[in-house]
Length: 348
Image 1: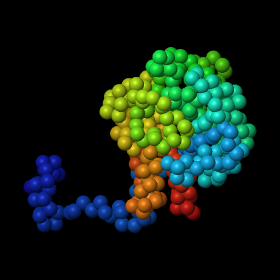
Image 2 (image 1 turned 90 degrees about the vertical axis):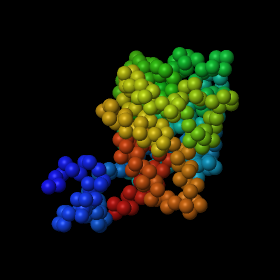
Image 3 (image 1 turned 60 degrees about the horizontal axis):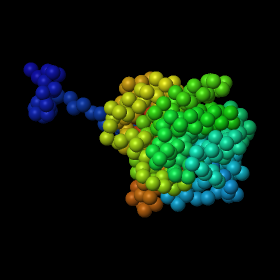
Image 4 (image 1 turned 90 degrees about the horizontal axis):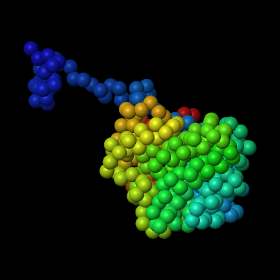
């Protein structure tokens, strides 16, 4: 007699079983035969409220400027920020992340923590207009604000880690003072979360959360972002502080360090080539996990769709769902508006 245990010995036994008269075939296709049934048994659900929409705000411009390497994405002037965010909110998206592009830079990134800086003014505008109906996240980094384009402060062409985290803490405080809900340090400096948490607490901003760019990898997929934010390094690269993409155990160490330093949300960046790390992080921590589907991921999809090689709506739905399936709770994506519109249309 062939029992259920025999199935485990391999395909050969499975084939013999199928030749036994009357042996039932397992028909998984029963659960796929109509759209209604597929929806009923759907395991992973992507929601508009999972999406975080990035906004580039550029100081000193009077009208939106297109970003050549990121079709349909623009740098916004302060004067357009509220109307742009209203459009985002109408789709049901409840969170944005702000990236500032200043009109002046220097070696010590002073404009990054200027109380009247581009991000600080942006946060004040959004907080005043949207009160508490919008989650405002700010990127805390120095690359857009330094003349050299690196994410930390240089000393003899090397990043001074400890000086950099002191500056990053000042930036975070200035964002919190302007009304940010969440600050997101992205410089990959050792100890940056601890320094920011201590500074926020000391200055009375205990309720401001930290989203750490915990496992941010040195990636070519950031190239369009650097074009958008004018933050390409003037020399060298960022491999001495951003993670090598070969090291998954090191990524878990980075995530654990951020957790021990007091982070509220951990982030993995980029998203699509690192779904395994999102999955590992989900298995190892109960912390909220954010995945950043970066500019290069966006640009690749846009280029292929413009050539007619893929259907844009279908491919972004598939890709963003895969990120959620891997374990992400929220996704920063330049597809946010498009994805929200697709889901809203499907639900109407």
